[in-house]
Image 1 (cartoon, helix red, strand yellow):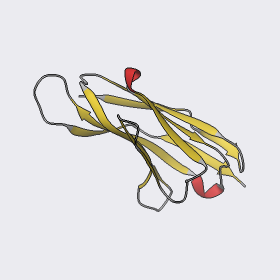
Image 2 (tube, helix red, strand yellow):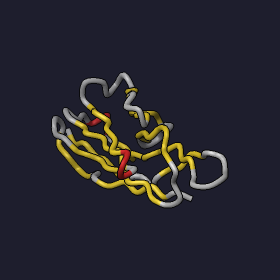
Image 3 (tube, one colour):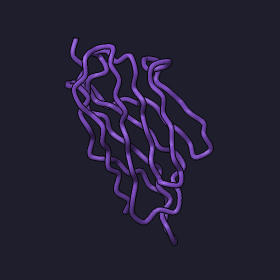
Length: 121
């Protein structure tokens, strides 16, 4: 099984920036899509941004123009650069990857443990 570990969360004032990282390790042949999701208190988890191994990206409307997702496929790592942060960006940010394992076996979805992002007004 693959493990995904996030880092880079923290407390920042509105208008500030943070950069999240997520590194995947374990029995991995390839990762098709990697993405970031977030969950605010009392709300459902929602998509923030995704990136395919070929470089196609997708963003939630609420973060377009402020957040940038990128990948380093050689390191099985995905990043989320978050600029112009707003209090409504507060939540736990989770990394997700569609893992194709080494050897035989179906692809599966793996999640990180989450990292807290808090934006103060």
